[in-house]
Length: 334
Image 1 (cartoon, helix red, strand yellow):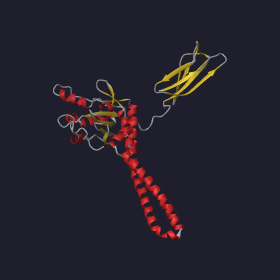
Image 2 (tube, helix red, strand yellow):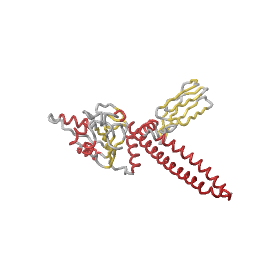
Image 3 (tube, helix red, strand yellow):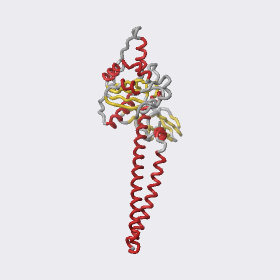
Image 4 (cartoon, helix red, strand yellow):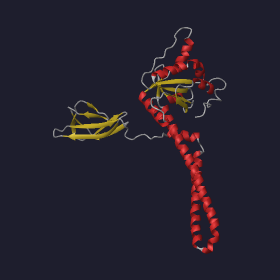
């Protein structure tokens, strides 16, 4: 939300709202047929950032305020959220401590190497100290080796931290995407953490329909493992699933509807997130893909093609029964 304050100490005449659309921005023009005195006028726009305020005054004492509001925020949000950094520290609690000691060792070895270098120069320029050269070279070599080793270890941990934080940040963005349940209730993905393992099927309508058909033999087993499917039609043609409403199939149909009860909301956000992941993975934008999430919301696995429903049943533990508490985190390697 962006705010701007226009301080006008003269009388202006206001004419009805005039709205103009442009390709990259929207311009709002306010004029008036009444005479009013404005000191502090506060205008607030949700999801718009006001980037320019321009007023003009003529001899008839009337003015206009033109506000340009583009779709881009006034200050772009940070790429990495604080939540992602905190989760990274929780997942790797000793990494920061290790990196601190690596820097301390690098500084110590670097200082030792500097002292050894000055001693070596002094020994080389003074023939009387020539006997000290081998010992000085040995110490200098040790210092250089220590700087190289601890520098490599620091670089490796730092690179791993950046990759982990970036992945967690993408998962946080995923958790903010909205879903609609069958009862028309809209919820974010994050509200299902600890309750469901989501499987996102993203592709054209024909791909979604075939994934629906292939999951039928595993319906009950998937539900026992807390799996819920999110069908996302990339072509905008989400197929209408056909269920057998006969009395004999009533119970099975209820399970099928429960498994496929979620639908994406705000398709543009889903498309943007999915395209970013495909670009990072080097996958064609047109390729149908699936993503499976763990109970804690992290991405468990992904791939091109149809979801391996049989593999999910074989690998995932049930979320109910005597083993549910012990095996909640056994979702496979991330």
